Image 1 (tube, rainbow, N blue to C red):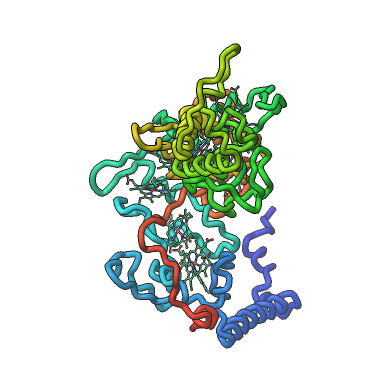
Image 2 (cartoon, rainbow, N blue to C red):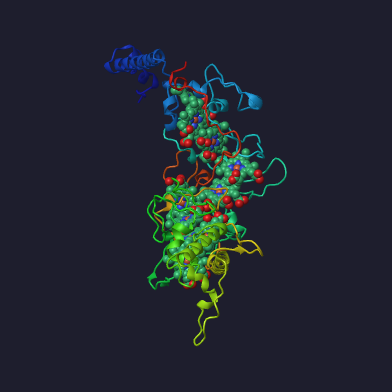
Length: 479
Ligand code: HEC
Ligand code: HEC
Ligand code: HEC
Ligand code: HEC
Ligand code: HEC
Ligand code: HEC
Ligand code: HEC
Ligand code: HEC
Ligand code: HEC
Ligand code: HEC
């Protein structure tokens, strides 16, 4: 039997002019195509007419720059660099017919953006232009969320232009192996505060005060953020009148909640230690104590107190100080009338011996001089421990103090450093994805380098404070 289903016969079944025949579906497709083109052409035309460039944009600008959304030229403009940078690659003239790239000089019109380190080495392929770190057109963009690579391109193998660096050279991530222990602990530094404080003696259970009451102290009785406004439990200064050490270290409360207020005698110690400043054991001045101040001021205060006491009761002069110490069965030695000044000087010297050899020494290191008043060794309680990183107590207020400062309750010497090591931080800050602007799906606290470090050198000149722009210049739309 002959084959009937030949290719030729099958081909005849296909209608060759099928596509020329009208069909509602094909008509719809055609009209839709035309409509889409018309709509987009109209959109571009309209936005061109309204001088709006946003259709060409890559995405919404970051929150701080949102107000420049209609003014692409501000960043994508042709800005000529001035000064020594004029020849560098990133500073080259950013112009172009079809595409206008962003240039550092454009950013530098409004920002200082000072360089990181004088001695940094730039190799080929490294990105230290502004746009290399500060990502734009992603809407809400946090400058701290860029990739760790921006930093580790240098810090994984740190080199300096000349000489050697004292910093650890191979930092690759915030992880047990990628980041060194903090220098203060790594180098086993000591706390050289020149102020005695035994944490254990104050924090122990059943602390008995001189009047017999028993209290339980805790950290916040002595340490609170600088901007804390309520009064201190063992201080004698109302909150609106901040205490001030004679050295002037404890200024007015700042708005800074990141760090603890500096220790201050009036606010944190006076309630319990004023008795150490009592200067007369004879009972002449009940309840009165020396001011907590420089020895010269203490001296002037004592002179005044004894002069007034003598004026109130001239008979005092008849009693020599030794006469006050009466032994049983022994008569007072004969009284010798002297000049008022001689009596006052003698009593002041006695009071000062008590204060400077005993009272002040409870907390201070003192240098004695043969003929002059002693000198209180200037205190040096560190206000900041990290000079190359920042920290924020406020961000960690859900934790107990001892969660990080675990050595504090048992520390008996000022010299002990009570700061947490990197291990404590890694419990939460590690393993987060630090791969770019948007790191979603993190189940850990952020651990990108910029979480704890600054990049721009804020110490040099370079910091732009007063700009050069008028309001109109930033708000009008340039084409
Ligand atoms: C605040 C500064 C700023 C403004 C204003 C701005 N851009 Fe950008 N734009 C950038 C940065 C930064 C980049 C990233 C450049 C890079 O990765 O090198 C960028 C990238 C782009 C890109 C990707 C192509 C390229 O050149 O890398 C386009 C397209 C773009 N912008 C369009 C626009 C348009 C359109 C506007 C105005 C509606 C605008 N931009 C306004 C900063 C800005
Ligand atoms: C026309 C002026 C102008 C230009 C150009 C400009 N900025 Fe800004 N930028 C601002 C203003 C205004 C703010 C908001 C105020 C502030 O935070 O400093 C801001 C904010 C920022 C911030 C956030 C600051 C913060 O503390 O949160 C960064 C980062 C930044 N700009 C980087 C850049 C970069 C990178 C470029 C170049 C691509 C650039 N800017 C171009 C004016 C400008
Ligand atoms: C290697 C990454 C990196 C590069 C490159 C970089 N920045 Fe930054 N920038 C940061 C980090 C990190 C911060 C936040 C911490 C700080 O202030 O240093 C920041 C903060 C800023 C801020 C806000 C803080 C401030 O100073 O008020 C501005 C504005 C800024 N950068 C502008 C610039 C400009 C302009 C350039 C280009 C000249 C630039 N940045 C290049 C990483 C970078
Ligand atoms: C172009 C190379 C380079 C890049 C990129 C770079 N650094 Fe550095 N960094 C250096 C050099 C060089 C030093 C200084 C070494 C010295 O002077 O001994 C330094 C020092 C430091 C220090 C210690 C000194 C200080 O200033 O506190 C820290 C912290 C630091 N960098 C953090 C960062 C962070 C965070 C980033 C990313 C935002 C970054 N670096 C990006 C080269 C770089
Ligand atoms: C969770 C906070 C945190 C993160 C995240 C972090 N660091 Fe650090 N880093 C610190 C602290 C704290 C120090 C100690 C600072 C000091 O001693 O003054 C330090 C020290 C440093 C030093 C100085 C090292 C030395 O020689 O003592 C460098 C450089 C540095 N970090 C770079 C980086 C880089 C790069 C990254 C990102 C890969 C990073 N850090 C991530 C907290 C952090
Ligand atoms: C009686 C007041 C008092 C109490 C209570 C107290 N401190 Fe202190 N603390 C001080 C004084 C004063 C200093 C400064 C002297 C010094 O550097 O040791 C200090 C210093 C510190 C320092 C920085 C100095 C270093 O060596 O690390 C830390 C951290 C600290 N205290 C944590 C704590 C913690 C945590 C608690 C609670 C468990 C606590 N303190 C309770 C008075 C107190
Ligand atoms: C209970 C402990 C205590 C006693 C007792 C004490 N002081 Fe102080 N003194 C402090 C504290 C706390 C500070 C504040 C530390 C600081 O500012 O760094 C301070 C600061 C000072 C300062 C400023 C030091 C500086 O360099 O800034 C002087 C001066 C001073 N005291 C003098 C005295 C004199 C004089 C006596 C005895 C009459 C005395 N103190 C007794 C705790 C005490
Ligand atoms: C709640 C009351 C109280 C407060 C507030 C207080 N102290 Fe004391 N302090 C005591 C008592 C009680 C002792 C005796 C403890 C002992 O020897 O067991 C003492 C002892 C001391 C000693 C001697 C420690 C030793 O090793 O024997 C020093 C130094 C001292 N305090 C410093 C301070 C400083 C500095 C402050 C303020 C920052 C302060 N105290 C705040 C109650 C207090
Ligand atoms: C998440 C860990 C953490 C917790 C929780 C914490 N601290 Fe700290 N603390 C630190 C670090 C890190 C520093 C060093 C910061 C610096 O000086 O640069 C510090 C510094 C201090 C200092 C020295 C002065 C200063 O502020 O830099 C004192 C005092 C202090 N802490 C007391 C406390 C007290 C009191 C609490 C509880 C209310 C507390 N800390 C909770 C980590 C912590
Ligand atoms: C219990 C978990 C936990 C521990 C432990 C911890 N942190 Fe944090 N830390 C956080 C969280 C959560 C944030 C907020 C993160 C955010 O805003 O995305 C934070 C924020 C920070 C910030 C940024 C604060 C700001 O104002 O932006 C720094 C810096 C920081 N931590 C440093 C440290 C250091 C240094 C240690 C170790 C001494 C430490 N943290 C220990 C959970 C922790």
